[in-house]
Image (cartoon, rainbow over all chains, first blue to last red; front, side, top):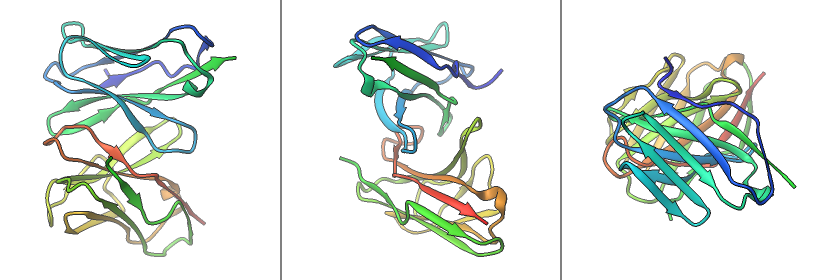
Length: 109
Length: 113
């Protein structure tokens, strides 16, 4: 089992709809969870961090964490064409962060 | 805002050359990291450092070395560049203890001919 798993996509979502990105992880001891956005040819940019079970909202973004199910998700409301990017899920393992390979999101105008 | 800078955005080198990639952060972060990113393989950790003059191997250290003489600067060295080291190289730093949020530099796209 991979440490951090994401569906590679592409995930196509109409403009204005909710995009839902999912991630599972294998280490039950993980305590910190991150979502990064990466535009083509650019470096990853941190958009959300979550540490406790439940939801965390920041503008149009909501991160959801369920440690019992080892599942973390990112919801993007009112999707915009500028949200088209690859989204990387990252989870801490001991003293490091392990990154998933990312989900490509395509917002359809 | 955290600022992580890398010495070059694009670099072209020849096989066998010694290559230096520099990374500087301005937020007094203790931790610094070097990754490479290749299509289909994701981000892979090369080396990291939790303090000045400290270094630890990541998942793919072969063919690379690092230097951290000052807290703000972390250098990646390709001792003898090879074509399979053509990649995007990303530097990151973090300050919230180990395993915390990492902030990335803009990346260096290295091509080895």
